[in-house]
Length: 309
Image (cartoon, rainbow, N blue to C red; front, side):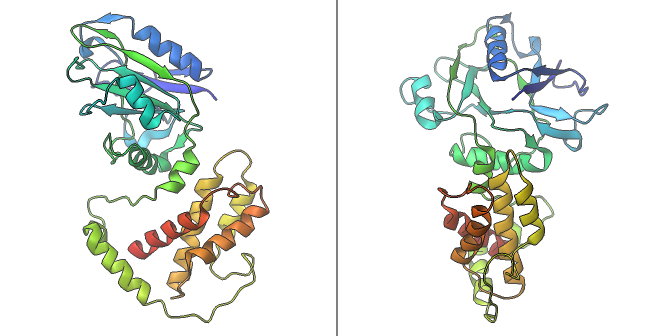
């Protein structure tokens, strides 16, 4: 899979025409290692790069972002290193492929650095906030969980004057984007969202429990996903047409839609019932969920619906 990046001359540069398309991840690794050898006085002497790919002939703005092209970066400034940094990071997320390099403000006593992860596929614009939340949740919040800037950009690596400079590369698997999205449900708490969404999590849990108790209509029966009145037939058709990637994310959408349809009819559907319907569909389309904790993901989908219905 190719890797792309958009370059900017400074934080004030909003032109998006300086796009670099690389043939593969290794070419990206080589580029960053080459850049890390160039001596620079500081950040003002360096370009910035972004994983964001923009709509043609537009400026740097969230509404103009089409996708993140094959990589994502996390800035880590306040990190207590346990022993050797390279070993420490490997112990935390060594199952993923990444490049780690120091920033211009890194010192021996306080290392500051950036970790760039290899993605199994591009992140579409509507997925970015969810992906960012899921990634940082998986990383146990070493970065900011809220993605406020789809156009986020990062200073390139360099041999910065007076800094503790370093760069290293971990070769492993790319991030399975669909699996990560399915694992960590996301609620976009934007300013101006509903009163319920702004409640503390403990109160929202109480509301969810109360709503669950109101589901008393049990006069529904079905034999499988085809005749289930709650199963989203349109999403099932989309799932059946997937040919390369996106199964896990689409299946999670199906779980949420099934839970939502059932609760709207006041039927107390269970995670086991949702999982059974989804396994039936999956068994006809490649068994992608054969070894996944589908009941747990169905339970997470139910929780999401109870808190947002």
